[in-house]
Amino acid sequence: MVRAPESAEVATRSEAVLSARELVESLAWIARLRWLAAGGVAAAITVVRWYLGIALPVAPLYGIAAGLALYNCVLYGITLRLRAERPLSLARASVVANTQISLDLFFLAGLLYFSGGIENPFIFYFVFHIVIASILLSRRATFSQTALASVIVLALAAVQNEAWLPHYHLAEVMPEGVHHNPALAYGTWFVVASTLFLTAYFATSITARLREREAEIFALSRSLEERAADLSRANEKLRLIERTKSEYMRRVAHELRSPLATVHQMVGVVLDGHKGEIPPAAVESLTRARVRLRLLMDVARDLLALSRAREADLSRQMQEVSLADVVAAVAPDLEQRAQEARVALEASVADGLPPIAGDPESLAQLVDNLGSNAIKYTPAGGAVRISARGDDGGVELAVADSGIGIAREDLPHIFDEFYRAANAREGGREGTGLGLSIVKAICDSHGAKIAVQSEPGRGTTFRVRFPEAIHRGETPATGD
Amino acid sequence: MEPKDARILVVEDDVDAADAVKTILESAGYQVTTAESAEKAWDAVRAQAPAAILLDVMMPSGTEGFHFVWDLRNADDQKVREVPIIILSAIHEGTSLRFYPTESDDTYAPGEYLPVQAFLDKPIEPSKLLSEVARVLKTRPPQ
Figure 1 (cartoon, rainbow over the protein chains, first blue to last red):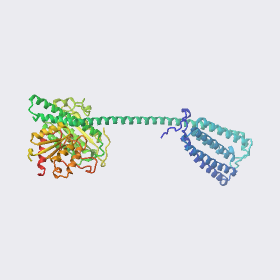
Figure 2: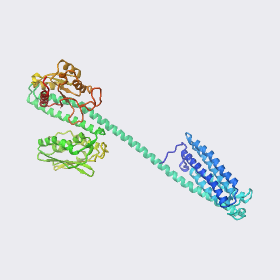
Figure 3: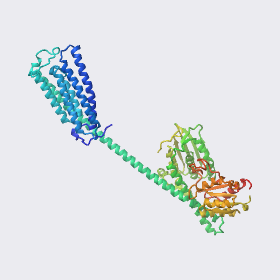
Figure 4: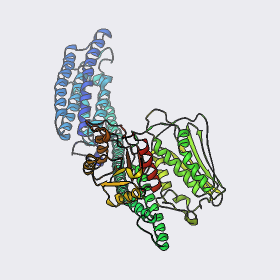
């Protein structure tokens, strides 16, 4: 995971550095490695002196190893204190890092001096320190450390060649007098120094590129996070709007129901002659008024059902439901309506259907709405068929009719609230335009998908596919 | 029980709805008293236990109708306890509403259905209203 820079001291693109936090963690890691180095040096001295038999001034060498361990204690303590600082200072961490690397160079120089100087092949270990510097420090600081390392190597070569200090010759490794060869001494220095500078160049270049990529990835990640947050907020806002709309719809319908029922009742009482005889013209008007009232009440009822289907927290009511039982419960009412409309109704449910997770009442409403629609829009003499079968782990309910069908241009809108196709409005067929909206809302809350095929004049088939209930009480994911 | 001998109490806060139901019942020969609230209904019941009660369950205070039913069923007077009740409601039959309180209190626990004899959806079909009233009066033990 790309982390954001914690310190306010963010470097420019050309001088990409670690964040203060990362630098301090790296220093702590290097301090742990330095323990190994101190131990390794002591072990190497022992092996070289007593196992390989190479004459070495062990006292100063062990002294340097001990010094390394001691100075590491101090540095580790400083690093831990830095870690605990709030806020972390990149400048202070950089100073500690630079100091550590410089001291490491001097320690290495000391070890090399007492073990053959530039004769010692381990002189190339300066490269490791330059690589570490290129990772931890800025480019400028890395080249400064490289210059320091080069000066140290030059000093080793000069001290040795000019005999300014005693030379500890590795007799078992190098021939005598080699250290007095200027070409070898300064030649070695040149090779080492150029290696160090080339290493610094390549390492800092690679590090800079990696840091740029890291910064790009971080920026992209941040942008994605912001977009996800925006999407989440927009989604929440939409949900709130939908919830508010649904609640308003429910309240309006609720407040309308009772007074509408009362007015319908009162008109009925007048029409039945309980308030005295009324003229035939008034009877006709009042009869039409009562029909309109009934339609209004149906709208209020359907609005309530729709808002309930959309708002339903079905987690409490979810249970394993047999679609066969649902169809069987709804069938008698549908059969009566079919008989009145002189439409043949057939209900056929396959045996052994797996249960589905759902709310029995909502599912009954779904079947009833689809069945009622099919009967309503099928002319006398036609047929409606309700069937259910297993389908690849789920259950498919199909309601097919030989009715008036739906025109292609109406198909995308049939689940819209209050939408009624032109041919549906013809022939005096009353409807609220909410039946299929309710069906769709119930499908969505059950994770079911609904599809429709239709041809004007030939009939319509609705197919609803329910996922199988795997565990008792499982709430299915929302479908399309 | 003959209609003329039966006094029906209609508990309904909507005066127009109460008047409509009263008109239907009186046309069939019943004596009808109306009450606009559970409190007034109790006054009427204490004065004289009716042969049956038609109760609008959705009264202004929400659960007033429910409490009235339970209080009636817990009354000391047997005649009052056994009065048949028909619930009148504007809720469509297809909803999942169950006529019981959702939270328990000292009187009843959640999930207890109302001990009533019938539910009628508003607007009430006059013929259905009269047939239900006749039915519950027939099933009532002789007083």
